[in-house]
Image 1 (spheres, rainbow, N blue to C red):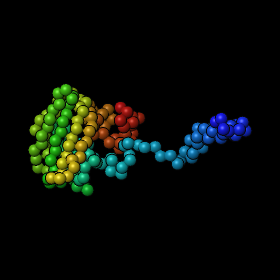
Image 2: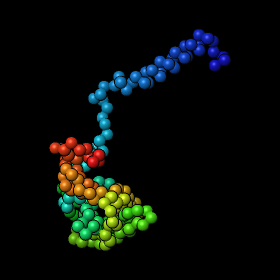
Image 3: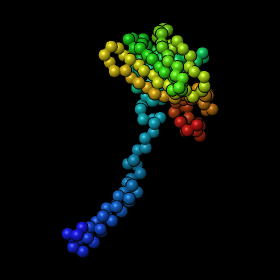
Length: 179
């Protein structure tokens, strides 16, 4: 800044101060209707879709699949048609790893009607870290889905928390994901 004259220095400082002020003021000048908050529970039209068994619909894979925990704590994956009905799994294969990293439970699946059912049960506990890998066939990149299976009952809809839908909260003061 040695090469600048005093008047140029004051002018530069004034410009920088104005730019900083405008940058700080800019969010308050924006129209509140212009900003759309990202709602993780409503950002897809089909996000509120329920599976035929009352489980969690996995939208990361096509066709979509429902993840359901059976009464004997086994994972059941059912592939869904566009209408949300069970459809053949085709050539899909599934692997899952559940539980703590120090003692993971590796699950393999066998076909049971239109569903794929894990041969192993979930590890003990109600909050189970889970990684599901779905392969569509040879040469295709597998889809990897990471989630926490929360098997506790939701106080509002009485379903396991992993399967709660935003529509279950219409008459509730609770916020999905903030229970």
